[in-house]
Image 1 (cartoon, helix red, strand yellow):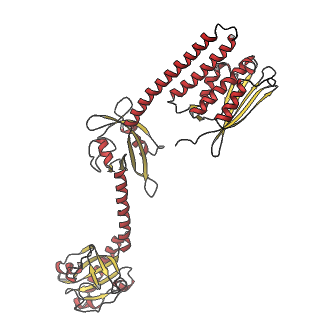
Image 2 (image 1 turned 90 degrees about the horizontal axis):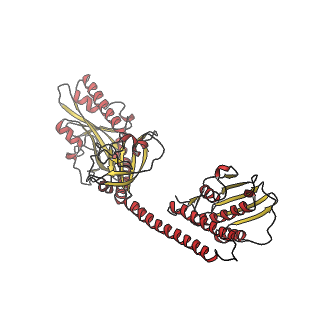
Image 3 (image 1 turned 60 degrees about the horizontal axis):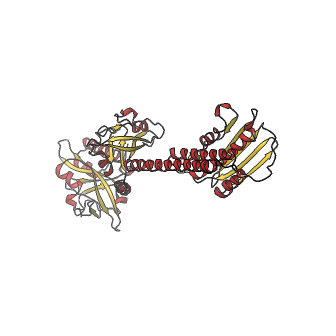
Length: 489
C-alpha cells in the first residue's frame, strides 16, 4: 500500500471510530470533541480535529512536529488549521477560510490529496498533503472534521529532479539530428522527437500506433517487411542486438534508406518494458558510397591500364634484346600481375582493406592450386589496412615465387605452412611464420637478391616491424611481426 492509500485508510478508520464513539455518548457532540481516539498519538501521521465552527479541538504529537508548534486548544483565533502560516504551492498566502478544512466544514464533503506549503514559526517551510474527512452525528448533522496530513517535501524535490531530468532529456532528444522514438511493452509509440516526425512525414498518435504500421519498413527489394521480421520486433523478443538497413516508406510515397537500431528497455524486475529505436537516414551516405564506388572503379581501371601499359612497354623494349633473358621478363610480368591482383582485391573492398587469409590464397594460387593440399594456412581472421595488404601481398608473392622455383613448391613432396596470430597490446601486432619443408636442400644465397631486399624494405622500413629470414637445410623459414593500426569501432 502506498503512502496516499495508507493515509486515506487512516482517515477513514478515524472517522469510523469517531462515529462509533458517538453511538454510546450521552452528549455525542461533546463526547467526540472532548475525547480524541485513544491511539491518536500512536499514529505515524499528523492528525487534528475541528468542530463545526473550525475551532481546533485536539491534535497529536506528529502534528506538533510538522507545525513546529502546539496551537492553543479552543482558541477562536486559531481556526481550521494549526500552521503558523499556510501558502499555496505557487507561493500565494492561503487564508484560514480557504483551507481544505474550511471547505469540508462548509460543504460536508471530504477532500483528499490537496497540497499546501506549511511555514513554521522559525521560518522553515515544508510541503504537506492533507486528507480531510467530515464527521456527522446520527441525525446527519455535521459535528466537525478530522484532518490527516503528511509531509511530501522530499517527494516534491524528487519529482522536481525527475522533471528537470525529463526536460533535459527532452531537450537533448529534440536537438539530436537522428530520429528517435520509444515504444511500450505492447509496441505502442510513447514518445518521439522532431527528426522522427520529419522522417515519417506524419504524426503518430501516442499509445495508438504500433511499431511502424504507418510508415511501413521495406526490405532491399522494396517489399513490405512483416512486423514479425522487423528489427524492433526482434528486440522485443529479447533477441541479440539488431542493427539493420531497410527502406522506410515516407507519407508522401518516397522510399528513404534508413538504418534501424532498436534497444530493449527493462523494468526493475528485468522484464522487457519497451524499446528505444534510432532511425538514421542513410541517403547521404549511400549517395557518397555510390560516388566513391564510381571513382574507385575509375582509379582501378586506370591502374590496370597503367600496369598493362608497363607490361607492354617492357615486352616491346626488352623482348628482342639478347641481354634480357625471357625468364626475367616472365618474373617481371608475374610481379605486375601480383600487384594488379592485390589492387583488384582492395578495389572490391572499396580500399577499406583486405582479409589476410583471402589475400594469401590469391597470391599463392599463382603458383600452387589450393586443392593440391600442399599449402596449409592457419590463423584467425585478420583485416589488413590497404598499406599492409599491398606490402604483404608483394612479399608473399616473392616468397612463393622463390619456393616454386627453388624451394618446397618446386618438387612433388614439398609443402608450405603459414601460421599467424595476433599479439595483444598497444598497438596490436601481427606475427606470421612462413615455413617450407620437404623440398630440396636449402643453403644461404651467395648474394642478397630482390626477395631479401623487398623483405627488409616491406617489413622494416614500410611497416615498421621486425623480421628474420633463415635458410635452414629443411627449407626456408621466414618470420615477421608488424604493428597494426587501431581497430575501427
